[in-house]
Image 1 (cartoon, rainbow, N blue to C red):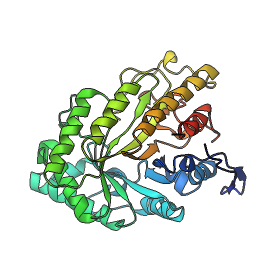
Image 2: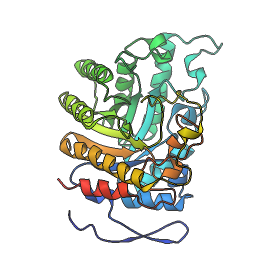
Image 3: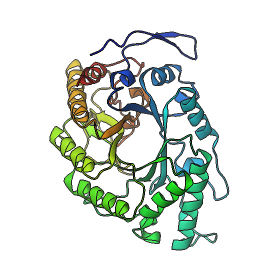
Image 4: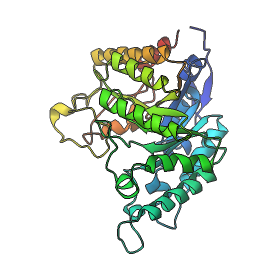
Amino acid sequence: MKHLGLACLLTAGALSVCAQPSLKEAYKGSFKIGAALNQGHYRETDAAGAALVKQQFNSITPENDLKWERVHPKPDTYNFEPADKYVEFGEKNGMFIVGHCLVWHSQTPQWVFQDEQGNPQTRDGLLKRMRDHINTVVGRYKGRVHGWDVVNEALNEDGTLRQSQWMKIIGDDYVARAFEYAHEADPKAELYYNDYSLENEPKRKGAVELIKRLKAQGLTVTAIGTQHHDQMSWPSVEQIDATLAAFKSLGVKVCVTELDVDVLPRRGQSADVSSTQQSAANMNPYTEGLPDTVQQALAKRYADIFGVFMKHRDAITRVTFWGVTDRVSWLNNFPVRGRTNYPLLFDRDAKSKPAFEAVIKAAQP
């Protein structure tokens, strides 16, 4: 591995943070390395987290501030201030900026699916609302946000289209119309379909067929986003390999969009945000810290995952971690609230973990 050198970053609190090897430099010849940010990162109130973002990553995704409920909370009200700060942060630091996400069944206000009288919206009415929203949001950041998660999590586990309100009111062409409107709003932006559990064969097959249908209609689909909310033993290396190979055969690129590894016990594999499980003592076993044996197992797990990513680096354009440090990971509250989880490469004090070193080492072809 080439020598990555040492540098020092200055945090907002004027504390010098000496740099370790950086992920973005280690994978420079392979794919971009990204992180999902919250407001503390791009407003730089989380000084240590913001410093890590600048040091380690060259692509960013907003966790929440471009979702419909945040950016368009009421019919005639848009709140762009947080998203503007996010985009400005990315531009200032020369990063590839991702917009997440335009059309999703979750975190979308109920008024979107209703008319002015509170009755269910018509097909034409909802299509107009979708188009207006996409034109407004994508249009505001045209040429500045480089890629958009256009449709998020449209598939059931069996590969069929989820019976969301988008689907029930518009029909199964709502996905195609979303891609059409996004391309119309910014013809140069990369456009993605994004989903979880695509490593399971039925859902993967559904995603393959969906992308084939969209491409057959002449629609722009730059890449398929596979979320990779992984667990210690799922998906297998073989499942990851088969999934990347299947998507590569479609002639589209692949983005790993929301990577983390859950080290805590849970039931099932779903990353559906509506899925919750009851708290119990045995569901939160590492409240005082992660045992070294588990740290080392996590490091090996990340090494194995990145080994497959490197095998398919000709198809992968970006690998984005869903969070920056363990302290702010969504997995502290999913699927059981209030747990102490350790799914990322940097701990609660923004210090690198053995998993970080394993991922750096895996960058060697």
